[in-house]
Structures are given as C-alpha cells and as structure tokens.
Length: 148
Image (cartoon, rainbow, N blue to C red; front, side, top):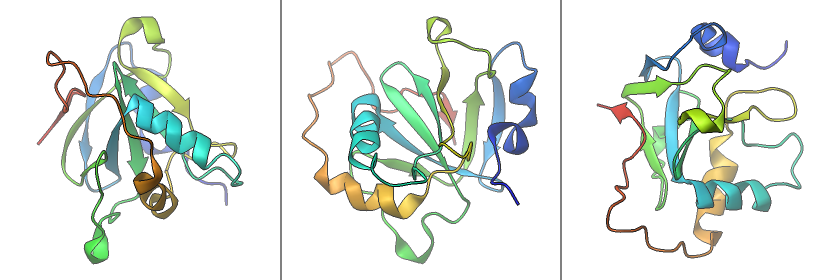
C-alpha cells in the first residue's frame, strides 16, 4: 500500500481555485515552524531515506508540517520553535498556488510522495537547530492562517 499523498488527505487541494479551510484534528495535526527552522530540519535530516519530512505549507516566514493525529500523545511536548496543533482550522492553498500568490506548498511530500511528516525524527532534531534571528517587531509568531 502506498503512503497517503496530499490529494488523498485533502482532495479539494487539487481542484480549488483559492485557499479553503480544513479542520485540524481528526485526519491530521500540524506543527508550525519558522521557515528558517524548517530548512534546517530538512538539511539535518537529509541523509535519512525515505526523508522523514512530508508535505509543508508555506506562508511568509512560516512552514506548517502535516503530522498524523495523536502526534502529541503520550505526553510528547514539542519544544521551541515548533508549535503543535491538534485542533483548529488550517487555511490550505490549492496545489497550483505558487510562491507569488502568498500561501503555497513548499513541499509536496517526501521522495515517496508521503504527505505526513514523521514526528519523532523532527522532534529529536529541534534542540540541534541553530539559534534563529529574532523576528522583526512587526511579525507575529502565529502568522499562518490557523485558527482554534
């Protein structure tokens, strides 16, 4: 059986003309990272195959990784700079959205096309990230259109 892709998890992404809301919780959860941290995670885990990072949404200076429901079960705490959400609403861009249109897909999955990010390797690598530059005072940490 092949791993789920974006269109398996969120079929509307293939045909939508504009961003649309999807409930977070039952089918997937999210982990948000500053884009710089997302790039560092990709670099640090790049030697693993299949790559543990799946699809990622990008909006400005933030990436949202899609993780399996229950990714904070058993007391798993996501350390800074990650922000885990197991409920709320995520504004999902169409697959056709490019970076010039604001929110877009930074990654369409790993080499196998898997949408889900494996939480444990990402969780383990977070303390190794290089310190990030402070965000400007005009930026907010919760920039991605994700609502509780």
